[in-house]
Length: 89
Image (cartoon, rainbow, N blue to C red; front, side, top):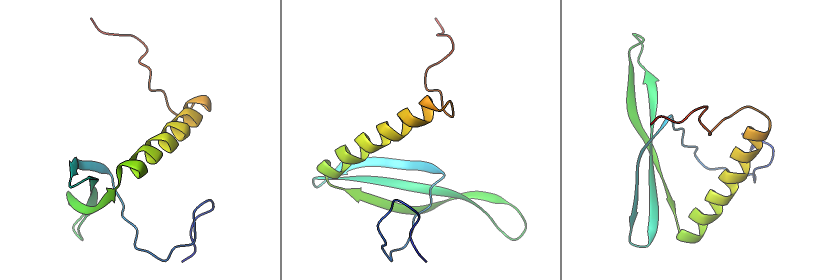
């Protein structure tokens, strides 16, 4: 299956995540654990482990930078608002 536009054409398995299941730093690498919500044949949903993403510190910083850019663009387009309308307190 070809890669989506903007991504290199790698023939590698994909990991789907609905939720971050954990984040850790061990042996010099970041480990991001993901889980996904799946339904069985009866329609019952449950959260299951879906995979790990293991990144060097340099890759983690690059990922952070690119995520910040994407989130900024989503905010600019009005598709995401990370600033609360009012502060409690």
